[in-house]
Image (cartoon, chains in turn green, brown):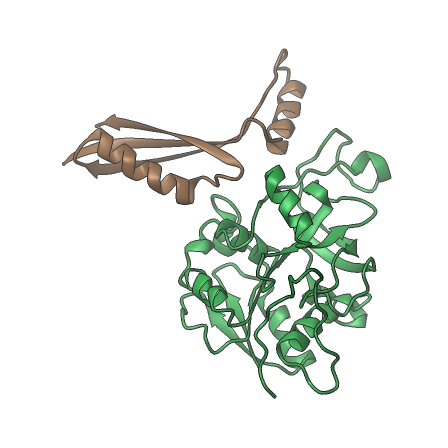
Length: 263
Length: 84
């Protein structure tokens, strides 16, 4: 298989993600300049974290018109592979309408509760949050989460100023109904996200967005190493080897449809 | 063609929480501005545009604002067009 990590002006987690895919998982991986539009050679496309276009206007608002993002709808429509947006990548995918909802400025309410922050205690603080959080696996029958147990608590770092997931009630309902909510913040909600949402997927089960950074916890020296399982899960979904068990299926005839490559 | 000054005012939807507005409001109160409520923080995008008419300028800007300048999930906007 071949993976691409897209490089926008202002991406800054591109090399970390590239390192995990290429060095830790030994996947053929390209750093893909944002002006590229030929995506057919890639089984996995990662939109990495960072501050594309300086987060001007809204995070992801300008990057969504970049040629590479404009080429994504066709890539997704023909179920060519998997698209994963991490942090700023998630913001770009929601701005592009490829994932539902929006990511808005953080609202921190935890300061007065756990006394952790240095800021003033108030009803809500707008701040950039950079720390490791606990997440609960809400659906483990997806290409992204298949290596976790249902209900498992994992740890990944977050680092964002605009990560408060927000969507109209009918969208939230359909996300819940279709089990598109994959990870939720556990214990405390760091940014005020609706339904504690940290990661979702689209209806096709091939487009994923997550605010936490799996690439920053992919080796034991950085913590639990839980992030590596996210990338391993994607690789397994795309490139099942005889040693791997089959991709788990979601119930009620809504199986995850991911194009698999032959060995 | 005439030239117009276009102002696009973008603000968070009224039914949504605006933490930025809340933070600014708290600071305003601390700085002594009393009897204050309902602070919302938005954006102003201003540019000059050549068009046949004010109506045409407004139509083009509205179309692109819906797609790009505002995010319809969280924001609403208004367009002002003034002939220069």
